Image (cartoon, rainbow over all chains, first blue to last red):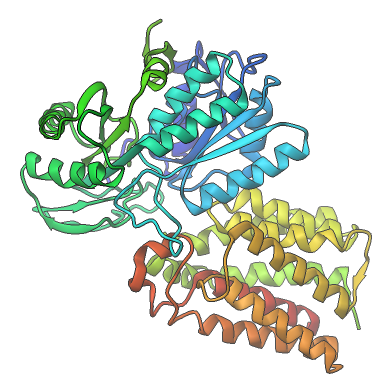
Length: 333
Length: 210
């Protein structure tokens, strides 16, 4: 294992310390229990937005704490859900009297820990709602599985709900916006290489020099199929087709297209992927009216990409365009 | 015979030892169908419980069980933290101010703990989860109590039923957690949660005998 670390056990804490000193104008970091909170929290009269999950997906979620996006984020150990005590403290720290929304990615551990935290917070008199994001079309959604995983759409939901909260929408309204984003967005990803969890010390999975995994999860979970590598155009078709068919996206739809890097893929390739996505969608009569390109929800140093499409309307477009100022995403101010 | 505070403290100490001894085994089971952290996570949690036990040695049984649950919730992470944590917190709910548990008290506590797991995990029997070890253990405990068995005999029958339930998870198709994504590939592997659940109930037998 070759990594820029001091000790595998200290990776999360030392990275948090780095964020704290780099972005003191935007965020504060609390330790034991660990959570990142907006510097001006709690904002009186505003719905508080909390997300969280295992570390290793940076900049998600801590990099999205700030004006117009999250009020707090709880980082767990690498690829391990944070715990309810963290979430409870973060919920209390961002409760400005208008309630708190938990944005949760659909993984069994994350869902259960957030449920416990919500129970605890409600018993302390804080109004809490939760929305579970489950956008990964690579996974079969049925009564007999834990359901679809939460992936790229989480980033878009955090931005859009953050804008709704900043506009002082009620907890009920922000929750509805979040559910709408989840119902109108779909994602799928792929990997060219594996990733190595620092305390594991070896790659999460083995993959040949000439192979790729289609439908990968953000923790290196197996996808739909392992196959020989193909051209970017062919790969993009394997990602976009299931997404378009699933919702389904139809001719005339306006969408936000999010081309995400898994951590080890350079921007030049992501733009190349975006070019293919754009060509394919335009052939389907689907118009990209907003886009996001870059590595925002990563899987450590994994090389690969994911594509997320979100069907837009005037409300969602306006919320997407609203100003945001966080360590990892900022525009309009 | 009843379960005293000392027995409960010893139960937790022996469970911590059992988890430590089976840490790699649990992780191996979990790496086949999960994310290879069950042994390490439970070990971290039970070590934290061990360090908390002295602070509740003089407390009532409800406080002891609640402390165990809260400690597991805040240290284990993943899905096992909320599940084991909820189990102990719900067990504690009927045991506040009690200094000992009769067999009937323990049956009620175990029932409450299992109800908590079902509520939290939304699992059904045969989903290939810890419930597949715990529910048969509770059923065996109730049967033993009805037939007038001693506390120790009832606990032994309960742990034996948990072991049988654990073994019966191997041919099952996983319907909860990360293992459910594997579909048919989850068949043929013993469930790690059912395995640690049996260790928990076996530790209580050992604590009573000690």
